[in-house]
Length: 128
Image 1 (cartoon, rainbow, N blue to C red):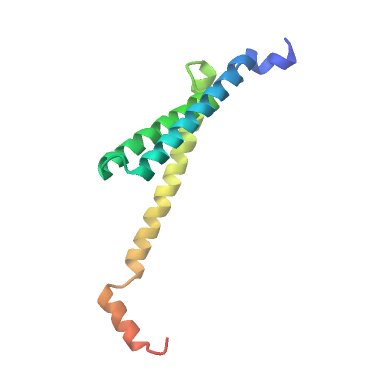
Image 2 (cartoon, rainbow, N blue to C red):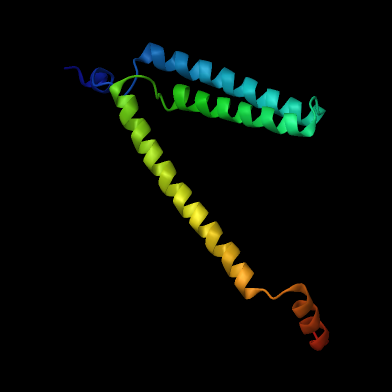
């Protein structure tokens, strides 16, 4: 077994020809999707709701291009393993972010008084 091609042989790293083609296609598609989203947003080519939906669709397409071309997630067995790891990491980050936001919103709700209490406090503390 040749050490230079070991990762290619076990399927972890795509073959050199496929790799450069995937990067080139991914780069061009990423630029095209980014510029399309930018132009749609700056020139207001659609009504607001339709524009938001179109931008979400373009963002999902961009995400797919990133996964396929740069993270090399395809139909191979190694790709499935990488996809499972990526999904697990995404799930953990989602739990951390949503939990942190939930805690912050509830703390804000419990620590802050209602607007009339805040106005009363500010009136009482005129020296501030």
